Length: 155
Image (cartoon, rainbow, N blue to C red; front, side, top):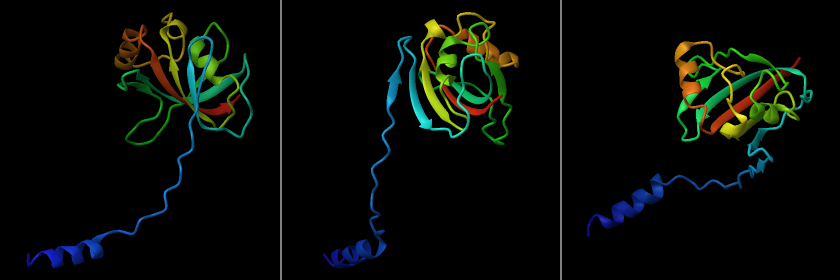
């Protein structure tokens, strides 16, 4: 009983003042007819990408369970090795093309890409050059993949 007043005083002294809580921005998910689901994380302010354009992007690819597959940005140093892709049907996975078309330079999107519009061929970009990440990506080609894409430039 002797300690009760001491603890009550300590709680009022050690308690941090409550900060006003702001409501988070709502991140809406757009579902395309192909099954691709897109979340706009950052809306770009630059030129909009169109079909047939050449684009420079950074991306992180994960399996749908969250396991890391590949990234163009080194998580330790922060250095990036952006890839340049053509937005045509012959060179890029269809789902990623759908994510990039209409996106503005400087923007960032997260997308869930089903296997039917993903890596249906080993010749579709982007595919890492290193053996380990390439093997990991292609071994999970029949699973939905999550891409977080930043459009750096429309060339």
